[in-house]
Length: 338
Ligand code: KG4
Ligand code: ZN
Image 1 (cartoon, rainbow, N blue to C red):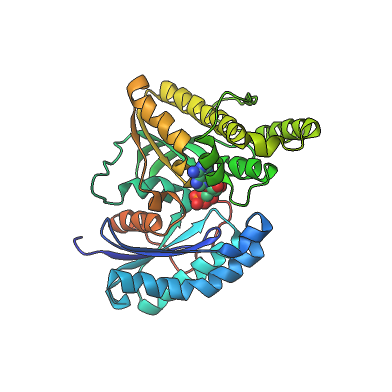
Image 2: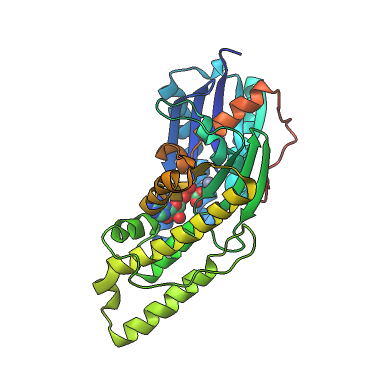
């Protein structure tokens, strides 16, 4: 199994991505981000599918060119089967099926959430890999989960959000403050200059290891509306403190559940993934937890945190080794539990 070349395709949401892996190493990882959604303040599914259809061929060509390999050298095609937006998934699924058929090589379906977690196993210098069993916190615009990872293909969801994902909580809060979409990175930027204790927001009481973020959004909205009535410039004058307080609350919610999960399972290997892993507050809280609670924490390179095809490729490679192939009757799956 020395020379396995996987072409991976990811199209679950609003990024079209293709990657080539040589065994567990990334040769290329091309991502075409769809700017079109900015003006709508969120992803418009119909526009996303259309953009995927336009982007997919050029993105695949670029991935092959950057990897400097010919498509005839490919060992298999891996693709995101779900979860995600149906129209978006259909583009990647159909493309992957056709290409595998044309090249007469195996097809490998990949669960996007499993890929966010196994992204930690893409071989990179200075990037130690988590040891089994470990806990994975997946945080992005579409997902918030705590997963117990006992092996590559032995995953158990311990908790997840009952409503909004954590990235949505950031983006919707940012929208209330008049910031453009996606507002998460901007909240992070202002938060670094503000006082996290300036405005205490209530934390939801959610059972077990589950999360809820819709209440936080509502309390921020009411708080801002009330303040603006008294002072129309309240947001502008307090942007840093408001953002710091929002970020502080969200990070506390995440860390409290992680602590609970670590205690409950006795596991102190903690890996995070998803776009919100870029957040400076969560990164700092995790670093602090190493000395505070004796955790070993793992954050993948940012390139592998946001939606990308390299993470689909690593799952493709691991499945290839085990002969876990799919046949041509496979279909996309919008709801697809790990
Ligand atoms: O993984 P991702 O690129 O796409 C999804 O699968 O959703 O995650 C995007 C999400 C957005 O909600 C964005 O606002 C959030 O990640 N995000 C951040 C930061 N960077 C990206 N949220 C807070 N702080 C950041 N620094
Ligand atoms: Zn994702």
